Image (cartoon, rainbow, N blue to C red; front, side):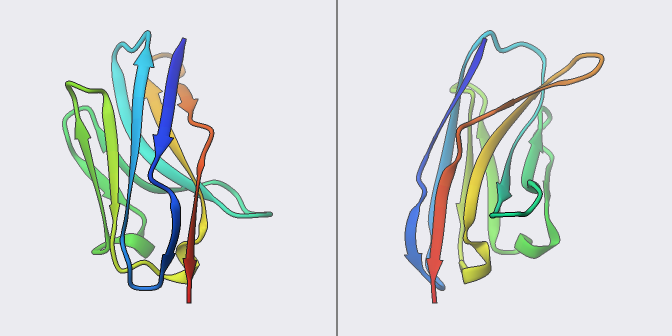
Length: 118
């Protein structure tokens, strides 16, 4: 089993910053990617940022230049630094860990709420 524990969500004013953390534990082998998704009411879950096992990041266009994803391999932890936050960034953010396989196996955190006030 794999457990993902998220932290760092909360309420912030527009223009402010937050840092999300996600620590993975359990039977972690052959990680493909770790990343963050977000989902609002009635919306599909969408990728915010991901980072490969080799350290290559990718970002949704809406967050490029504002968010930075990073990873501590020793701690199996992924971070999302969110700057210049906008009210549109308000959502529940979910940590994702993908394990190599055919097909790949995805694990999800329980989600952390980020609220950006105008």
